[in-house]
Image (cartoon, helix red, strand yellow):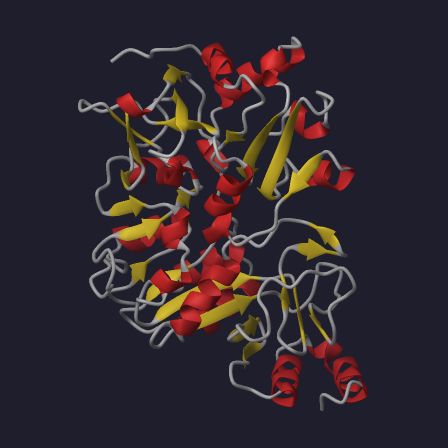
Length: 425
């Protein structure tokens, strides 16, 4: 089955300032976006007024810096290293929102978009797979025009992320590799946090965790568990070890029993090879995976997310640093709420007790400009290397005392003084 278009042919479908939907991460079609940028550089009027709508872009591009005088722009729904600087400089827009709701937010801003996405080669039945990125993109299947960029490097994954050749306006091929993200190496502090979390996860639980040193340490600490399930937005290399060892089999799950479920994947070639044609893994649209009402159907659901700072009330600021936007909400609140409603569910928010410069991450009050990602009424358990603070159902004084107890010892006296000043103790 031969490709019906070249990357440059996508421009004919952009005409009229059409809004462009692009998957996050490795779902980004690099050759197609190159062609769109080339058209913008050449002054092609068909591009004028277009904006790329995307979460977590991997590749930095000229339109992010405002190089095309507003004729081609970028609208982000979660900042990344590629977009963060440009947002702070005012050339990238950011739409706040829960990951579960990004499809509806994009549909609201772009009711008749062109979806451009990377995909696996079509199978013998004529179906492409969106590979490592179902995310919000899968929800546009049958609701928008698609132009696909096929690459042999894209694993063929299963779930609800297939699109038939008859449903695309065109497709092309490229030889671009997928970006690999090596697992972060956990420190002793990460291992201590992981131990506190792992000992509280029962056999048969369904878990959600992200990427980074602490999540990697937590997954490594689960090797003696049994019959775990996975229902998570992000599939990473740590999931491979748990599935291959038999720790994760999904037999206790209520939904998608025996299947490991995610909405996108980011990791190494080992992860890509593991995902390829693996029927035990399913990628579904994020508005399903991250829906708190879906998550709540699982018994003993365990949500594990990281934050940057926590105040005495339990408010978690996870998307700003020093009052400046660093990322966005993502799926943290989705899973925290889902775990709260789950029978036997637990929501863990993890963080080091101090910054790299030694400042306390547990603070009396959040600094001006910091944005609350997980609110005080939803937060359940806060974990540092010094222990676990149980906050759900606790009074303000109980919360404050519990959080001071897991702060770094060097800061506990000063935090206690501030707590008394605020009349929290």
